[in-house]
Image: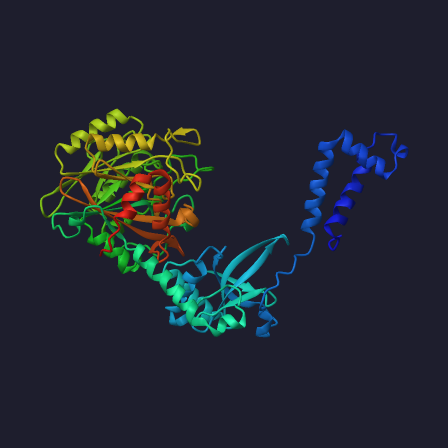
Length: 551
C-alpha cells in the first residue's frame, strides 16, 4: 500500500466503508458501489471521518518523496553516520543562513568543517530544514560545538546519515549566494552577488546601532544617568531536584567566570543596574511551602546574591510569584542574603523591604518600588494604592523606578492587551493601566517582567516603560529556549529630573546551560521593536525615526 498513488489510496479507503455503511443482516442486499453510495447518503459524517483517517494512515506509511538534493553526503564515501552538530532548524528564514555563515567565517576553528542544509522529512511528509556542520573527526567537532555554546550560540550534537540530502554551503564564499548550488553562469559572475550582499550588511549594521537618542543633547550631557534593567533571574535551584543547581556556580565564584566581558561591562558600567530575582535564597534545610508534586518551587544557595553583586547589579525586585516558595523563613533568608551582598531590595509588603534607595556619587537619589499580584508583595492590582506609594517615594527621590511582575505567561503572551490579564485563573492585572498610572504618580522608569517573553516598550509623558524583559538568567527549571530564552537588556539614559533622553536595547540569549550571552543576531532587540510597532506605534516611530549611531 505504501507505493499506491493518492487516487488508489482513496479508492481503497472508500471500499472499506461499504460493510460499515450497511445495516446488520442486509449485507448481501447491496453490491460494493451501492454500499458506498448508501454510506455517503446516510452517514456522511462517518464516511468523511473514515476517509480522512484512511488517508492519514496510508500517508504515514508511505515512503518519503525524494527531496532532489543537489549533493549527498555519500560524496564523502563514509559508510557510517558522520559526526555533526545542528546549529539551527527552520534555517530558511530570510537571511538566517547568511548570518550564520558570517559568524562561522570569523571563527578559524571552523575552517575544516562542511556547512550545509539538511532536509529531514517528518513522518515521510513534512520537511524540516536544519543548518549543520559535518566533520570526520568527532573530537574536533565536539570542541567546536563547545566553543559555539560558550559564545552564546545554540549547538546540538548529532550523527548524520551519509545518505541524507545535504546541500553544501561555501563557508569561504563571500557571496553566500544560495542554499542551492547556483547554475554555472552565476558562479562565473560572483562579484555582482558580493556587491548586493555588502550593501545589505552595511544597511543592517547601521540600523542595528544600539542607542536611539530621543534628545540628541543627552548623548554628551554629563548629567545624564544610565539605568539598565533585565528580566527574570534564577541562576539554579537545588529544589526539587539537586541536579537543577548550576555546578559552575559555587561559593566564591566570580561573575567573570560566568559572563562575557561585554555583558559585564554593560551591567558594571551603568549607574544603576536592576533585575528581578525569582525564587528563594536559602540553605537546603529549608522545606518548601508548596506541595510540589505538581508545581515549581525554587531554592538557590545564598551565595548567588554575591554573584549578582559582583556582576554589577544594584537593585533587586522580590515582588513575584516565587519569592514565597519557602514561606516566611524563605523570604527572610532572601532578604538577609541580598542585603548582606549590598543589594537594595523592594516589593515585599513589610518594613525595610517595600522600597530601596540608591544614592549615586553625584548625590542623585534613586528609589525602587516593586509590585506583583502575589501574597506578601505590594499588590499590582490595587492601582490607586500603588500610585499613592509611588507619589510618596517621588517626594524624596530624584529618580523613581517601578518594577512590576504582571501579565499572562508564555509564548502566546508577547502582546500587551487593553484588558486585565489572567493566567491559570489568577488575575495578573491590567499592565497598561498600571504602568501609565505609575508614571502619572511620579515614576520615571518602569521595568516590567513576568510573561517570560519579551514585549514592546512605550514612551509616555517623556518617561520610559518596558512591559516585559523576558528571561535574563534562568537555569534549568525554567524553559529557556526559543522566545523564552531571549533577554532584552534595556538601558535608559535619563536626566536627573527623570526625562528620558535615549534608549538602547541590547540583546542577550540563554544558550548551553542557561547562562546569558550577548546575541550577535540581535533577536531580542528585533523582537522588542517589532512588538512595539504592533502595540505602541507612536513609540516605534520615535525609536526608529530618531535612530542615531551612537556608542
